[in-house]
Amino acid sequence: MVVMTGHQRRLIREHNDRAWMVHTAEALRRTKKMPPLRRLQARVPRARQKRQSWQDMKAVAKLLTQAFDGNIVSKQDVP
Image 1 (cartoon, rainbow, N blue to C red):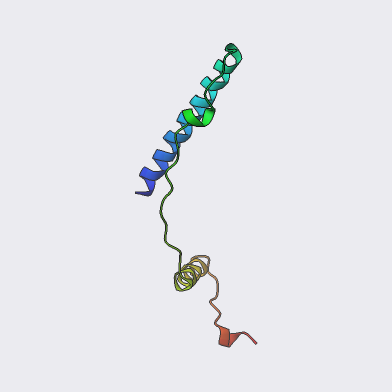
Image 2 (image 1 turned 45 degrees about the vertical axis):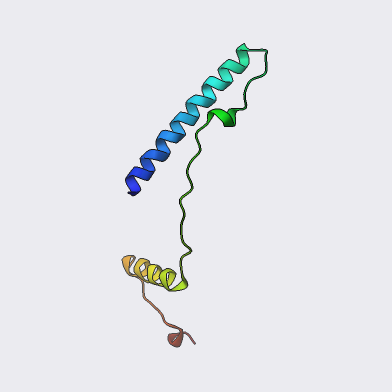
């Protein structure tokens, strides 16, 4: 799923780059009013993400600490 999302974002970014290039080239050629660039660009859909709980954050922090060979210190161990 992550790979597909990344691929979709790359395609949208490439499309927006081409839209900007065409828009700019055409703006130099035309003298009449052009549509705004935003109307030519694709929009990136926003993913609905739930807020991460503090328990989840703590679990991720422990995993990262272990992955980097760190020591996990609890509140009781701190003076």
